[in-house]
Image 1 (spheres, one colour):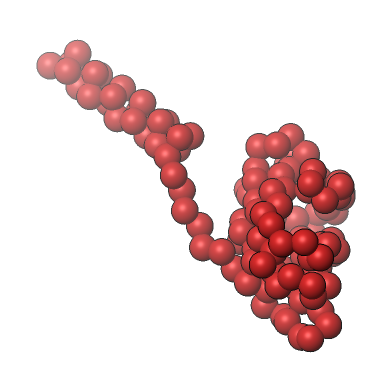
Image 2 (cartoon, one colour):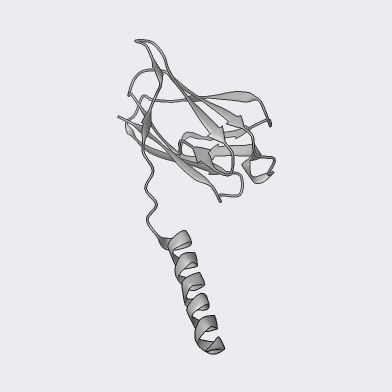
Length: 124
C-alpha cells in the first residue's frame, strides 16, 4: 500500500512539473491604457514575473512602458529587449519608463537579465 501511495504521489508531482515547465500557459494581451494621437503608455508590474506579460501597441505612435519592480530578486532588476537594443536597470520600488520604437510592426520579446522571465510587445 505504501509503495502504491508513493508511486501515485510521484506521478502527480512529475505531471505537475511537466505542466509547469512545458504546458501552454495563456495570458491575455493588454493594449496601452493611455493612448492619444501622439503618445501611448502602459504600466507593467514586475513581481515574480511581468504583469501583464504581453502588451499591444499601435504602430507609429510613440510608446512608453513603465516598469515598476516590486520583486527584490536581482534577476528582475534588469529588462532586456534584444531586438530593440534596450537593456535597462529597474530600480526596486520605483517607476522606470522605457521608450519603445513603434515604427515597425512585429512581435518583440523581452526578458529579465537572466532570461528566466519573459514578456512580449506586439506592435500592430
